[in-house]
Length: 246
Image (cartoon, rainbow, N blue to C red; front, side, top):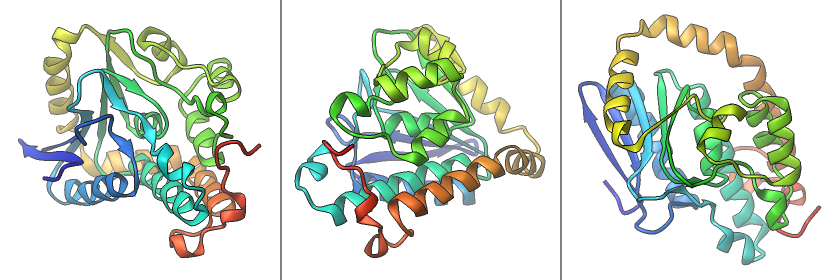
C-alpha cells in the first residue's frame, strides 16, 4: 500500500502490517497512514490485526529526529496525531488484535495497549514506556491509557523508572494477554482473528463503549489539556514535553 505499511483484507479480516523498511518510527506520515487504514477497516472488515513485517521490531516509537529539530509545532503535531490514533484504536468499532514479536517502544507500546487482545511471541525483546530513560516526561494520555490495561505495580515501574519488559513480564504487567512460541504465532493469530470475526458486532461495540467511555474521556481531556486540539495549528506547544524537559 505504501512504504510505511501494508494493508490486506481476507475473510473480512483487515491486516495492517507496519513496514517502513527500518524500525517503524511513528512519524506523522506513518501515523496518518495507520489512521487511514483504520477507516478502511471499519468500512470493510469485521476484525483488525495489527503487527509488524520487520523481524525483531514492532516499532521504535515516536520519531526522535522530530524532537531533535527543536520545532515545537512539529513535535506537537506528531504527538497529537499519535495520541488521537491510540484513542481511536481503543474505541474502534470492530475487534482489534495486536501482535508483537519485537521491541515495542512508545508510541508502538501505546498502540498495543489500545488493542482489544494482544498476542506476543516468545523472545528476548522488550516493550513498555521508557520515556524517562531518554529524558522525556511520559505524556498524560499515555499514562491514562497504560493505567487502563496494566497492573499498578508494573505501571509504576515503567512510567516512573522507564523499565521495559520482555514478553513473560509484559504478560504479568498486563501489556499483552498471551505469550506463545514463535512457530505457533501465525496459527494463533489466524484462529483468534477468525473467532473474533464471529462476534455480534453491535454487542461488541456497545460493550466496548460501556467499558471504556470513562477512560477514553480522561484520555481526550488529557490530550486537549497537554497537547491542544486535533488541529496541529492549534496545539498547546507550551505544554508539550520535549526531550530534556521535566
